[in-house]
Length: 130
Image (cartoon, rainbow, N blue to C red; front, side):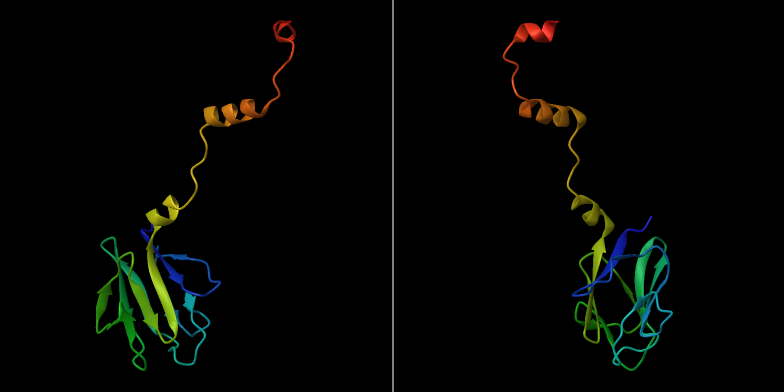
């Protein structure tokens, strides 16, 4: 199960779980496509090794930065990291954080209590016994 996901800031792209290698670039076959002439067709790759996610720069024209530092080889990715490619900012988020942002469902007993609190009281208690 993926532990992290990539979220492109100021974009309508849905979060992308890192559960396999992800090619980032301008190419139409990129897993995460960034449409900008400053992005290489094959700019970077996020891959899994020993249960951890790493980023590797593939394109040489423009540097890929993680938390403001240019990636020279491979960079371990952690929740909270920000990948910068041209004008794009990609947040690395924990899948656990995403799950904790979901509102908890009410337990069945609490749901029944909420319903009974909203019911009108019966003016004739004897009618309930019948």
